[in-house]
Image 1 (cartoon, rainbow, N blue to C red):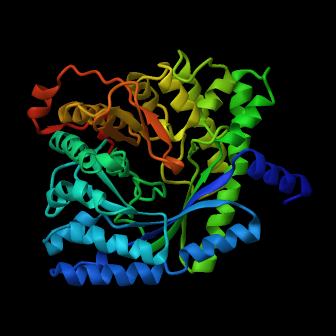
Image 2: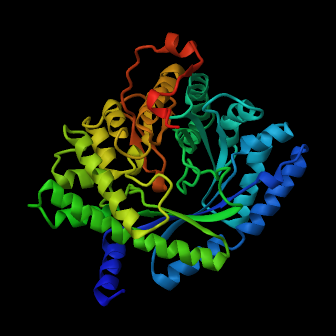
Image 3: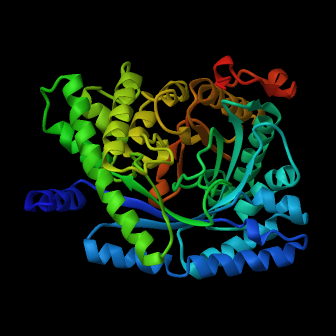
Length: 451
């Protein structure tokens, strides 16, 4: 039952505490668009996306008006494009350009799925797509890319880790006059979920239905405000408070997802209950941790606080929806979180501390800006480190790292909008090149053998 108090509380959360639906993402399978002729394949892709997602933005706007709930982004994710490259051959950038054309036609904010899954090796089309990523992202505005290089079952593809280190550097170089933005649209995963609605890592998995609606909610400001009202609570009482708050946030996501599904005549998939921050003051995961009792995010105790926060959010969310999926946790993207930006700028938050925090939260080294002269093998090794945490802990981890070409530690890179701005963070420059040059695959851990 919904009573007057619930309605007023939700209005307060929206107006004063930055509660919003971060994204409605329509997942679309492109498997039936495969063709040995790449031009025919591109034509099929354009027609299908425009037909399926024709009313996505319109419906999102209508739901916003009907319910008074802000829906910040309307997005599309598609089947990993490398699978189509394996059938058609040709230049994969043609796929990126037709996807960009479709994104412009339907009016979405981003389109994800310029992706490859290479955790156990490269199949037909994978290398071609990965090698094309820098050009594809530099020549498009709305296209996002991801590559899964590791899973708990398969281990870590070290050849892919090294290659992606090179491609991230190339992507930054190609867009150095646009604040290296292409690197900010590329995510490297371990254990990538197939139903993630958040960019830049969203793609439509092979086991997903032909078309589906997934929703991502966001409410760091609501959680911070709830904690601020109870300065004398014990840690377990804080955990219970966060759990109840996450329940309320997730119910709103469930409502929007079901309503969008009904209006678009597309199955409802999942609610991703990740706490996704923004650069706006008061909408920060770091500020939640500081409200709990840390002087600065990055201080001793940060990992413990984040572990408690992440667990409480998940427990509250799964009670509010029978369809929780995606990443579902707390995001720590440095440039997109006002508190993280300040902590990194002031030296309290380091890449090594972010790596430790990765073990207990969603994603990992996310929207981190590093010196432009960082060697590609160092970037590849950072990717491998994050993948190792995900592989061993049977969780999703990811790297979205941006070499700031021409900038060094202490300078800043400004992206604008939800991507925010980021201080250039110090990187350990001791060379991992001999290790990275060995190639091959790090075997899966013993506990992956569950059958």
